[in-house]
Amino acid sequence: MKKNGNLIVISGPSGVGKSTLVKLAMAELPDLRFSVSCTTRQPRAGEVDGQAYYFLSEEEFSERLRQGEFLEHAGVFKHRYGTLKSEVLNRITRGEEVLLDIDVQGARQIRQAAESDPVIRNAAVFILIAPPSLASLRERLSGRNTENAEQLALRLAGAKNELSSFRIYDYIVFNDELEKAAAELITVLKSIRLRTANIREELFQ
Ligand code: 5GP
Image 1 (cartoon, rainbow, N blue to C red):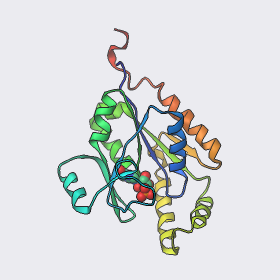
Image 2 (image 1 turned 135 degrees about the vertical axis):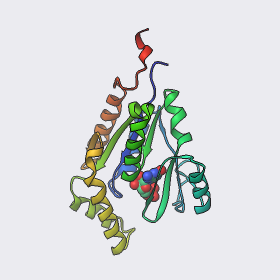
Image 3 (image 1 turned 90 degrees about the vertical axis):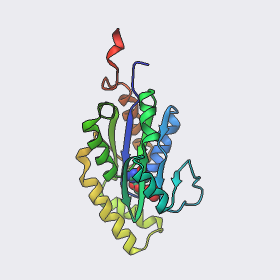
Image 4 (image 1 turned 180 degrees about the vertical axis):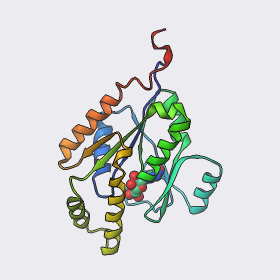
């Protein structure tokens, strides 16, 4: 194996359609491994433990944090989320490509980890999924009818904050039209595979 795998970080505000885009991209690129995060939030209908998330109690989460098991972790909308090192590090050194669906706080932590860890530095690529405008995001969120006015305001403020950090990402995909955005995301993911950064020194030896 002459290459390490890529560590692909995808963020995007709530309601932007990120999970749909990620699903479409993963169907097209079956070698891409989804990093299953830990969370303290309750499972939603249809979410299977160990597939969507590892659903943990507050105590279990704190214990894993104390044991140093997280590559990054953050509080999002009153719940805790974290990426396990075991979901990512061995896989990328085995040459597997791993996709992380995490928020901007997590993305920042991976950027920081990259500064001191060359394996992460060479593997990590950051993609932001953005709405065409804040107005369109507001429309989408209120159309879902899953949030009350207070939650809606909270999510919109969170979105604004997340989007204002766009410069920490290498790529931005605007989800104005699902099929076009999915095609763009797939193009980005395919081109990431052609980077030289994660090729090992012994390539031509
Ligand atoms: P949801 O609860 O809707 O599945 O996710 C809420 C937010 O938490 C999303 O923006 C998602 O990207 C983020 N998230 C999910 N897993 C992680 C994680 O392991 N770390 C961080 N920092 N954010 C996460």
